[in-house]
Length: 491
Image 1 (cartoon, rainbow, N blue to C red):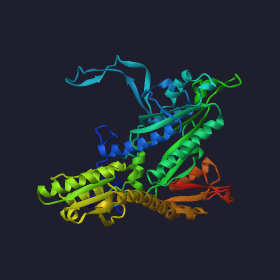
Image 2: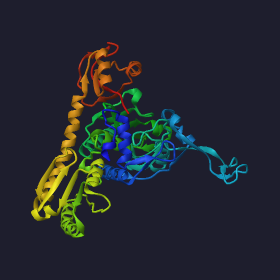
Image 3: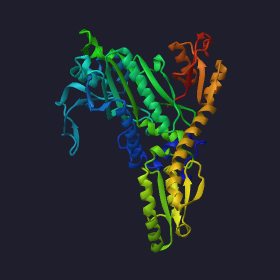
């Protein structure tokens, strides 16, 4: 199965598209630009969702749900936000179909069923949520309001790619209201930290935390905090963003509160989100020419056991032993699958689980029963070891931790090797062509940023949080600059 994958070095984009389909993660649907997430792909999303949801709740957030449809008048209330998303909006104009009198057996839109006001299919939910918050917030006692929703959104993309960019995708979006500017900024920064912790500790995907430049900022935000990851093809992936919205949405929707001094003021806002794009990031950070490589913390199946046998008697004996191994692993919170299908040979099963990125594979045959051993193989390095059955549970528990750490370290090493520090535009162009992050001085103007993008297709991914004060000159214009920013081509 895995041999049919295009090599990354030959065509990275083709490799990615093939892998998503062959590993049974997702496929294109009958709806242009939309995808079907298959059970194995959705199981990865469920694990991501569970961990993120836990982290959100630990930081005081609650889940709610808001409508899919946004009246156009509400959507356009915050002008920058509306303008930023206008070209991507799907719009509902009618509410009924009818039989087509000119085409028997076909339907048409009923021309008499035109909506009085068009409904935008949410590309993001600030408008409908802030209109709702107006009725929820009267006093400082109602603040902070810390709400998250798990939902789908629609952004009408012309060029789509499974998980990375689709017309409809799944995500979470947090929307919070605060009494002071400092509280709202602290919230936006806190959520950036939550996303970074999730990316690094669960996805084993190192990220750079930083602030977006003005031109890359979320429409309607005063500041956008981002986490940026580097994929194996040298392109950056914006993996999650958190926005300080100031009082823009509160003013647009007239959301005021009475403060402790008895005076009325507009609340301060944030919004933040990550999406199923993270699955694309997971694939492109770790996977290889043989298929998926999944970090154990997010793998739907952490351990697979494949029996090697001749005849039903041997299978029965192996199955009996496997029951106790499965039970002991599950007591440790380890997900394990025993693949005793008789319709596939062991070699085909090995190839399937290699393609699907299962972190640990156990092979057990008749000789292993006699010797009290197991053959344990790890997906990340393909190393195999013969392990005593009595020691196997502790061995596997430690091995899963080791794989998680190894994948993160490997990704860190890759990022280090593919980050360039440059000081002139000739070097800059060479570094961008090679791929990876490029650290360079910038004069702070949108005009220069646009020219660099025009010349190289590279954008400022972020101004890193840990960027040191350092006098220098802009890589393009030679104008003064006091810190370096991070450039890359991006998804």
